[in-house]
Image (cartoon, rainbow, N blue to C red):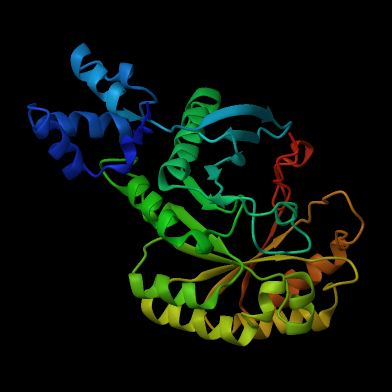
Amino acid sequence: MITLEKKDIRKLSLDELKEFFVTQGDKAFRAQQVHEWLWKKSAKDFDQMTNLSIQTRQLLKDQFTINHIHVDKMQRSEDGTIKNAVKLFDGLIVESVLIPTKDRITACVSSQVGCSLDCKFCATARLKRMRNLSPDEIYDQVVAIKQQAELFFNRPLTNIVFMGMGEPLLNYTNVIAAIDKITSPEGLNMASKRITVSTVGIAKMIIKMADDGVKFNLAVSLHDAINETRSAIMPINETNSLEELAEALKYWYKKTKRKVTYEYVVWKGINDTEEHARALIKFCKHIPCKVNLIEYNPIDDGDFQQASDEAIHMYQRLLTQHGIIARIRKSRGKDIDAACGQLANKN
């Protein structure tokens, strides 16, 4: 006898849920109740849906499943940062991070299991890309961190950054669907302006985002503004050169009128000279932007080393002199490998 695999109920739209209940001889409004449990209340199983009859819950259990994530392991840093090893329904693991600061709590979420890009300084890049995350799996990461913010800090989740494992723009459809649910009044009802999607700079997808009229913020992992150096540390630059990236970002700004944030790590012996700083200044002149100068987080080898404080402050000084906002970002969660570039499922 062949047993058909149950469908994840969260793959159904509200209209499809209504159709299901009507074909079962039930009322269409039942779909709205289930939809609210799934998204607003983030129910993990059907027995939590207490305003449904036992018979209705059994019907749902017979027909469907809820492929919810499970926080397999949680680590807390001495600075308050929390890293989650998140187990997916098929046993694969991704990581997400809660980052607390004085005025905000940020969820850093993953969009892929592993990564297909080969940035030399990133631990995630050493993992092969297994698959894209579904909208539900992305949404669940945010919900888990939202609950941790309330439980451990008695504060709400304020911001979301797609800076975890994977390249969000290579899972564009699912990332957009997740953000739609996160910002929907029927979901978490978070403001789009509180969400930032970070990319290595895939030009055609930046243009698509602009054409699609997205409302969230854009960050670009730049790390150098000289093609030769950037290609050596970020092979994506060979097919998405700085010139192509600049044109895409000009298009983005023309369509959205929103600043871009450049994420930039300064490494000893790689990009810690004035030549590289001035190349960055030139690149920043394309559109209004700001620069986050990020502390480097080692990934168990000596190929990349943190630049001196003098070099980092040289960057900040020159950028500021040219009217470009530049902030030095100290990494958080380093003691639990939760900082930028360190997410690699070591556990």
